[in-house]
Length: 121
Image (cartoon, rainbow, N blue to C red; front, top):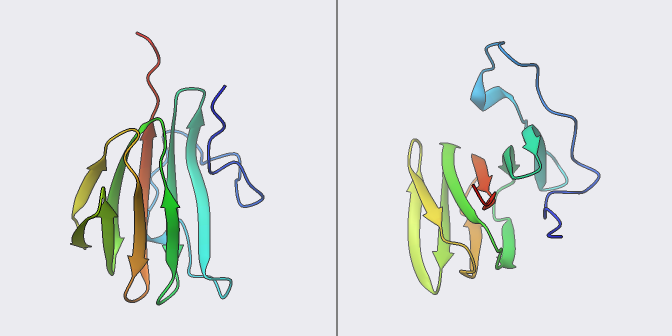
């Protein structure tokens, strides 16, 4: 079974249902460089918010799932299959399953990462 790459000590059980959450305030910047908060985590999908300190880089990875990245603060460069794209506030991009990608922050930024597993429906 595929192990979610966000299964780490930064995960928390998620946020309360049917309550308004201010997206940009879900995760704060961290001196450690990268901070993560899980909003929803289910067997076949997850929604996480992440913040990156200035000049941080998210190592190249290739996941067996589709991934939708939305910027909610700042700007970031995302490289998918060797093609570089700049994203800023309000922009998002789909990273196709099995495509190598990485993120490089030019400044502080926050994003929402929605991972969708094929549930076989």
